[in-house]
Image 1 (cartoon, rainbow over the protein chains, first blue to last red):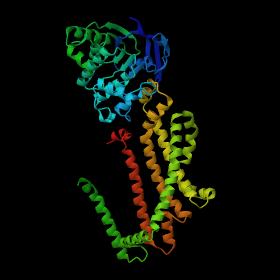
Image 2 (cartoon, rainbow over the protein chains, first blue to last red; image 1 turned 180 degrees about the horizontal axis):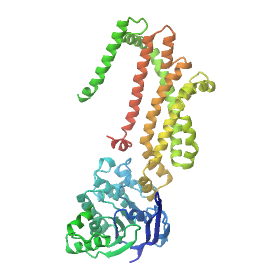
Image 3 (cartoon, one colour; image 1 turned 90 degrees about the vertical axis):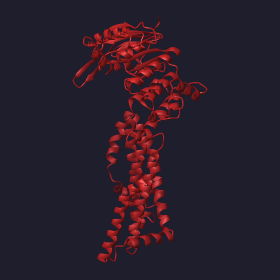
Image 4 (cartoon, each protein chain N blue to C red; image 1 turned 90 degrees about the horizontal axis):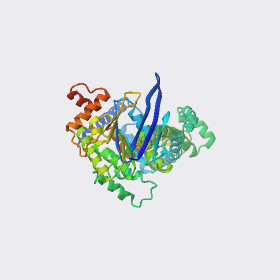
Length: 260
Length: 254
């Protein structure tokens, strides 16, 4: 598989009150074209910093990010970031939000295209609603649609569903898989939810606690749709949790820790 | 019905206040301080001979002109200072020194520069309402959440789109707050300014009524009218807060 994203020897530190703080220690990985890669790691391990570097918003101290063979150091609409807190503009309607990224595009019927994608994510009938009139799950749908409408080649998803309740999160994961089966995107997902990673990804990278390093890489060879209660999934989950360092207790404990 | 219930206590207090005022004037047999009735008939007199309308019109025109000038200059200046670090570092200290100076303190200079015509009070209104608007707008730009700016950057939009679709709408609620404060101060100042040197306006009405024969009924009538107009001006600005494009900001506070 041709590699879409090539992350080479990324290092990043910050100056904190207590002195320099190394957040990312030599991280390298690649994501193939059309591949879904999930990065899991404990809270506060520098996952978001890594994502912001890969998406081009933050410069690494060392190392480089290469997309389609070209080194990249600022964001562009080839890869859209979807973050935990969301960035749907509250002062624009759903339709206006979706049309935002089309500004400057030569597309003839921007409103029509926006409404088409609103329909794809299940927001038909809410095109003229303002974000504060929507639920958390609907906001995520709007954010996803706004990313999809500019036809990005890459989706960078930073804990996209972690602010949602478990049921809404599960529903949106299934919708995301359905959309991805129709429009082929390369996806890089960052999450602390092991089950979410197994549900969605082709490959899972496990990060160590800070400073972040890639500690293990696991292929998920299960076909979609994946049965989350199957023994293979449980096995994978235990393996990942063991890598994170919480895998030795009884299963019940692991379950709560993976949801928390 | 429930609105009526909400208004009941304040109406009762108001009625009580008027009753106490009336009783005290009667009890002290004051020859100069008017009863509420005398104030009401004085107001009627002003309405009938048309001078009240003229005074209100003159005051509103001055406030309107000075306030609009302040919006036209203060908002773009605030946006610029909010967006460009260097502009903020350069101008903010100067404005922070000018801002706490009472507009009343500017009166001698205003007369020196602009004479005793309409330009003086307009200048005073401008000076009093421009600073709150600069400060609020600047603060509004500074508090735009980074995730929104990042999203705009991510979609690679033009500078024009960035400003028209993200920066200005994000700051608009703060601009409206600044306008509300600015208009409130402007109304406060116009009356004070008109007391000094002019031949029209509500401030002039008050001073002139006192000077020309101790007509305290008209003094109090003028004060009450100033209060009522101030209240309606604030009401108009509150309507702006109800606009769909800014309601997201205030909705969180409800």
